[in-house]
Image 1 (cartoon, one colour):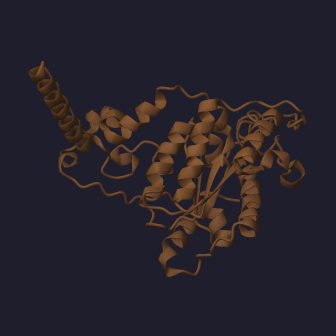
Image 2 (cartoon, one colour):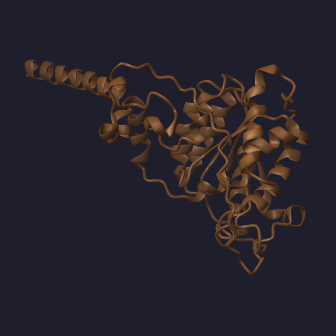
Image 3 (cartoon, helix red, strand yellow):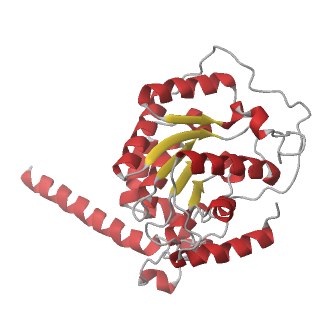
Length: 314
């Protein structure tokens, strides 16, 4: 019996050692697509200088289509990075927060509300922990593209994203009816497991010295007043600031006939300008962020802005 236990322990230790070696080989050595990094636009933050990003926004595709960090830089000198991904679930959000705040100490962490109602399988948290411990479980498909330098190169994340996580949507695919967000007393309850993830994200953000807020960006297709009520009820109970831009129809004046690229699912770049303008004023008035435009340590942001404006017209 004792010998069997020793054999089992030895087997586990050898397996762990092999997984660690393979993880080192398979993990991308740079945070760019060329090196096999998935969702490289969101992970451009890994290449930013340590503790240089004051606002980080997490969420799904609503996030990346609606918020222009480089416009905030141009208008206010605020440093923001959108770390959203298409289909990002709350476990993905927490994993991204864990990774990004290793080298960033933001003043404000924002969770966009759309993924709050996405269902989460109970096995996902275990999978995410295993991904962190053994990256080969996440990047095993890279075997086709492995190069000799993957076996010995150091990991150097130095690639940045000019858009700072924003995804430009230039097309227009209209919705003829601008009506939505009809008031109701109905409350769409947030799934229990999702609440735990949000609580963890709030705890982890505050532990890192950041304020935590939930922001809902305009989406005619995905958002409604019952969801608004559900998030507000939860946010009030947990002491979380909640800003719902879907409520501000008169202030934002999103025209769903001209300012969406997919029939009201996401805003296009015209709508993103309006969203970003409002967020900029909110950040300036409420969050006491520093203007870094004249700081030489942020010269690259000015250079990135020049490139950004060549590609994105507003």
